[in-house]
Image (tube, rainbow, N blue to C red; front, side):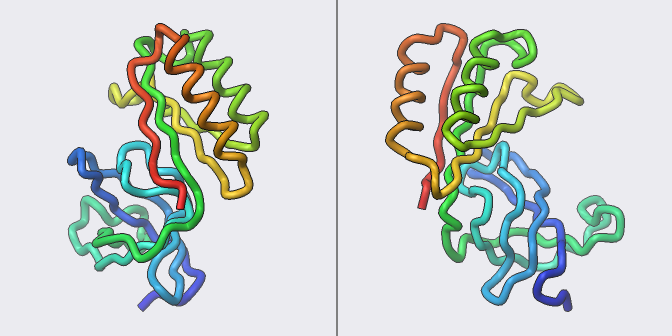
Length: 159
């Protein structure tokens, strides 16, 4: 059995059918997600989830105990905004502008690296609890209305 504070891998499947593996920390009430999910739109960084051990070797990574997420215990207070662009992020000036705006609001950003063709046109923003959601929402609204290179914007629950 893993001890509280141990790091494990958590396999999370979104309602879109896409699996991803995130870092998680063992906690009294479950596992605290330590990454921002790119594809599992139901989850956010710091959410507490429950899970069951995975024994299949394709999901056990580098000897780190791996679990399969079986549900949400409670929200961790973070939100996630996923922005899909028409073009790869590295070639899109609007993407670079959006990153600067979100970072100025106290948010952080991750992009897929496009390896194996995985969404080179996706930016994922982590919205911490101390960020002003109204300002974040107005940025999202402005870019949705005025940016022709954005395909879609999806946001997860904040709380």
